[in-house]
Amino acid sequence: MTDDGDLDQGTDDVRAGLRAPHKHLPCRLLYDARGAALFEQICTVDDYYLTRSELALFDQHLPAIAAAVGPRARAIEPGSGAGRKTRMLLTALERPACYVPIDVSREQLEDTARALHAAFPELDVQPIHGDYTRPIELPRARVAFARTLVFFPGSTVGNFEPAEARAFLARFGELAGSGALLLLGADANAEPASLLRAYDDAEGVTAAFDLNVLAHLNRTHAATFDLGAFAHRATWDAARSRIEMHLVSQRRQTVHVRGEAFELECDEPIVTEHCYKHRPEVLAALLAEAGWGVEHVFVDPDQRMRLWLAVRA
Image (tube, rainbow, N blue to C red; front, side):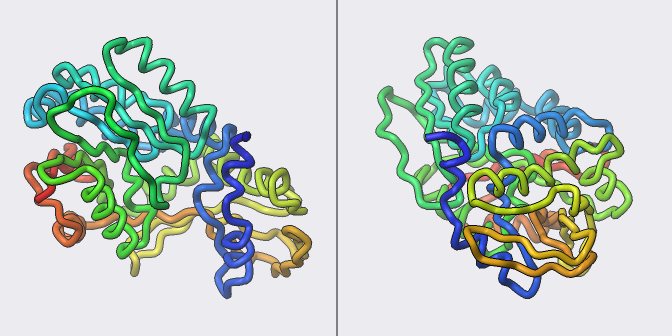
C-alpha cells in the first residue's frame, strides 16, 4: 500500500470537515511523502525558529536528560519524521536497547528505520506504520530494556485540541507504563509577528506544504481542487492562543470529493492545521491531568521553546 492509500483512512472525516460551518481538513493529510519532505525543508528556513531553538536545547541539555533516563532504555516516538532529533537522542543515551518509531509516511518511516539501524547496529528498531492519534498496539519487545522514554518533540502537541492533547498524553502514558519518562518539546511563543513569519515563511515553503494537501486529495479522494484557486494564509488567534494555517478560496467555486459537491465563497478559508502555543502553566496542568509529573523544564533564552521531562506515576 502506498503512502497516499495509507493516508486515505478517512474520506468521511474529510467530507465532514468540508461540510462544517468553518471548513477544516485533518492535519494528517499534510504528511504524504511530498509533504514530509517539504516539512523537513521548512525546518531549515530562517523564519522557522522552532527547530533551531529546540536543537540548541538538545545540544545543551541532552547529557542531563540521558542521565535521568539511564541505560538500556526503550524509546517510543510518535511522529518520528526524518529522525534528526532522534539520532541526537539515541547518541546521548547510554546503550539504548530499542526504538519504536511511529509515522503515517511509510516511505520516510522505512528510510529512517534503515538509517538508524545502520548507525546503531545493536539497537532493536521496531517501526509502526500508522496514525499515532488513533489507538495503536506496541510490538512485543525483542530485547530486554530498563525503562521507557516517550519522545515527542517539535511542539506537535499543540496540533491537538486541549482535551485531545490530554487524552493523547494519557494514552501514551498507559502504553509506556508506570515509571516511564516523557520528553516533550513545546513552544509557548505568543508574539504574533514571529509566529506569522514562522508559519508563512518568505521563501514560500510552508505555502507549498499547505497547498500539497489539495494535490494529495485530488490523487487519493477523487477530488477536483484547482490549486491555483487557493492561497496559503497563516493567522494568529489570540483568544485561543493558537496559530492556524488556512487555504483560502480565491473565488467562488465548487469542488468535489468522492462525488460530493462543496461550495466555497471567495475568501473562505479551510483550516488545515492549528498549533496551540500553551503557556507553561497550561501545559503543566495538561501533563498533570494526563498522569505525568514534571521533573524538569529546560527553556531557551528567548523563553519560547521548552523541553519538558516528566515521569509517569
